[in-house]
Image 1 (tube, rainbow, N blue to C red):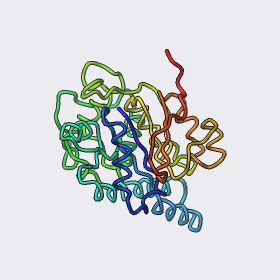
Image 2 (image 1 turned 180 degrees about the vertical axis):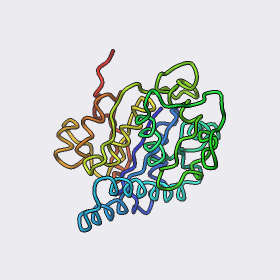
Image 3 (image 1 turned 90 degrees about the vertical axis):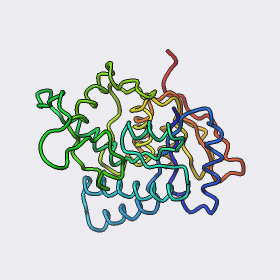
Length: 269
């Protein structure tokens, strides 16, 4: 599996759809999923935060909404793309020959809700649903059923599936080729972590074999720490990428949009 992260600065390219397609063609033998950066929408949230002192949490949630907005925009550009908010809809998109666009708000909300669960949390693992309206079969819903805030509470089956995934046990751990990470990077709710780090989180969460960064500039010569200092990736990216199998780079504004190897943070076993 390959995660591709589309930089938000590229969203104004007139031939963006064709350039994305050219990059995807270079990984046609892999299952791919795309993370879309917030671009100008996220920049607007950043400006609001600066002038109105929104605070880290409010700014973080609004920035995730900006990423959903830009992902919806890219979905409108690519006829075979589909916004997905969980593992089931990701696998379904692949089965239908579609390009999954990962809805960061939904995925991160579910992961954070899981991490906040105490071991003593009461879940009836044999039940399909508990309580009143709004709980439902979360892992069967499309992302369209998830509010744009990404704050829908997980259903009881979600909680069971998430616990199973976190154990990498018999059910769900390798379903559809989606293996899960036991421990990993947690996305901080600050401007130090942008869509770069979020795409690295997805790569670790889904055990991707490669993260491809689609950028507006040429590949850096140095490592991730140097790129962060130069503002080419966010400040958290060096830590977020340290456990990844491989990170590659594409200057999407270049003539050939060729994928170039960049860093291989995780040493060979």
